[in-house]
Picture 1 (cartoon, rainbow, N blue to C red):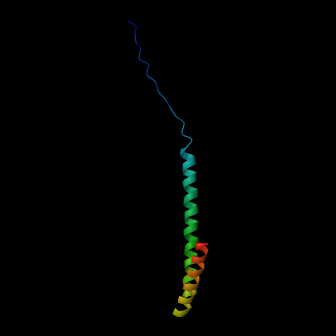
Picture 2 (cartoon, rainbow, N blue to C red; picture 1 turned 45 degrees about the vertical axis):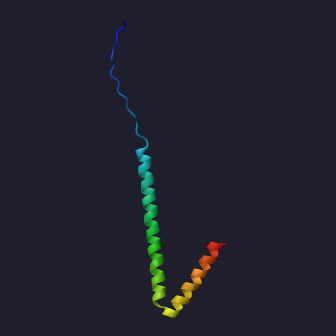
Picture 3 (cartoon, rainbow, N blue to C red; picture 1 turned 180 degrees about the vertical axis):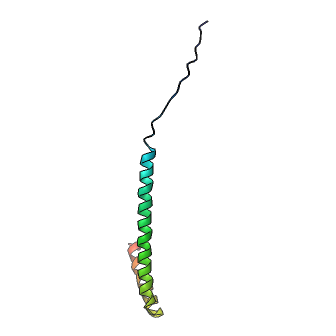
Length: 75
């Protein structure tokens, strides 16, 4: 009968991936923050413009923009 010997083994991995993920998350967070800021600025300028217009003008402009987008989406 052959003898068996148990040898303890230790495996170590070098983590080169966490740093990449952190940089990617920072880039996505920055992109998101910039996008949110741009949308807020656009929303503010639209609200400022619409506050100067009357209700009939708003309705006409809304219908015109809706038609424009619908025709652009429909092909």
